[in-house]
Each structure stands twice: as C-alpha cells, then as structure tokens.
Image (tube, rainbow, N blue to C red; front, side):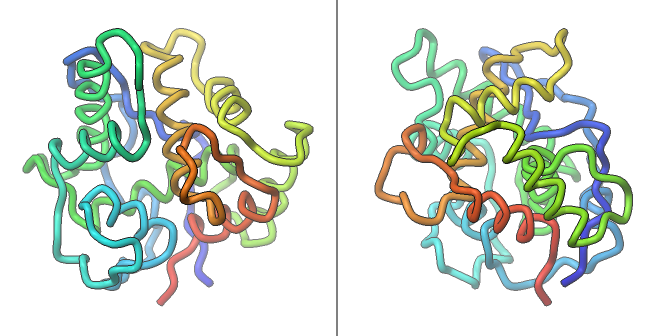
Length: 226
C-alpha cells in the first residue's frame, strides 16, 4: 500500500467557520501536496469514498461516482443533516453556511464552485493529520500506525467520543485561530462520521471511535488502493 507524503505543518480538518462568511485558511490548495506522487484512483471507495458519496447524497457503497462533483448546497445539506453541526444553536443556519464556505474554499482547487473526486483527495490528509499529527515527509506505514497508536494512548481512553475528538482537534489549532471552537466541533464531527464503522444508526455526535477504528482510519487515509 502506497503511503502519502503528508505535511505536518497544519494538522486537522481546518475549514474556517464564519457566520455567512467565506474565508480561506491558508492551507495548501494543491491535492498533490496531500497525495505526494500517487495517482488518484478512478473508483470511489473506502472511508474517503464513503464521505464523498454522503456529501453527494449517493449510497455509501456506490463506486461509480468518480465523475460527479458537489458544491455548497450539497455541503450544507451534509453538514446540517448528516453531521448535525450547530444543531440547536443560535444562528445555526449562518454557521452551517459559513462551514460549507470554508470547506469549499479548501477543496475547490480550480475555483469553479464544485469539488471533484480528485480534488476531494485533500480530505485524506486533513483526516490523517488529526489521527496522526506531526508525521514527517515520506512516513512509512509503520511510522503512521505507531504515531496513531501513540496519539490514541495519550488521550487515555478506551474510545474516542465526540468530546475527546473535539478537544484533541482544538489542541492542534493555533491559540489565535479564528472560530477555533467551531472549527474543532466541525473537525470532530467530520472525523467521527468518516471513521466510525459500527454506529451508523447513531447520531454522529453520539458516536465514538475504538482504537481499532482509529488505526484503521490512519491506514486508509494514508494510502491509495490501486
């Protein structure tokens, strides 16, 4: 299995969240920075493919959606209905809209307002940098698994629930990061929805990741199956 060369500069899924404001985070806009020199597979599969399909509104196991794209409307639906981001909060509509704008700004590399399967590969690196932050360029599969295990163990829990994932994501953000709490909340929900394998009938916020799920996600997000 080929391993991404993942940058340790900015960990986690850092879509800026603003109330009705689209903003860029300064993260790399080139999907090859996440993929290294790996070719992007045509078939939509794995945890990355499942998330891509959920944003599209397609079935989780649909492997034929590589030619499709999503935009802000699809992102808003996914964030609001699937992730239940900002549910019950003041100005929830504005927060959902701002979150969609931030994610779109990171993933839409050609600026056409739509995100393709190829562009969506950056999502892998964002998730990996939360699960196993601080990886060096060219990290091996063993290095990635070891780092992921160390992170899980350092949090001193049998499983990673929403609160722990949110705190872990927040700890990786700069202290002066705008909308830090909302970014951590969104990042935690994204990871829980992407990596969970056995609680699909449960609200995303009520799920938890076991060590096996954490390590499985580290493996999947660091590789391309060809």
